[in-house]
Length: 112
Length: 110
Image (tube, rainbow over all chains, first blue to last red; front, side):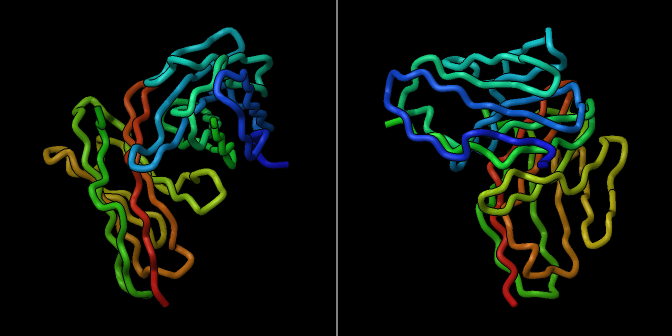
């Protein structure tokens, strides 16, 4: 099993639909993150969590919500998808501050 | 505001030569810097890092240099290999805030 697994890998959805992206990890790290990648903008932080009861907003949290269902699971929801949320989404885990992140393979989301 | 900038979207080098990827940052409070490599259809993978108390860190063919006064870091790959062809992201971190650059696509030609 991969250290970080994201599902689905690809998704096309319509404007206004609710969609959930899922992330699970096998490393037992407490810290989990959701990023989105857009061309020319790099990776931007949406939300992060340091344990099951800890949820924090990142740079661009508007229009998104998250749920940390267990230490190993961190899901990202778009309550009402809009076309400018079309992007590549990455989940990442970390052992702690000043450690490199381990990323999942990404979810390519297209909102039409 | 982009606090971490990679001004070169792409770089092409010959196999065996040196690749130098550059990164600038604006926030002097960043205290930890990292480089990630990304292949198509995969997530970024951590490559090398450096703390702000150092000015150089080396790992095999990869060396990261940090110039705090210029708010600049660079990644040197020597010698470059075709398998190094990928997108490279630099990142800067302070406390729980890690910011990424837009990436530089490196192509190493055989």
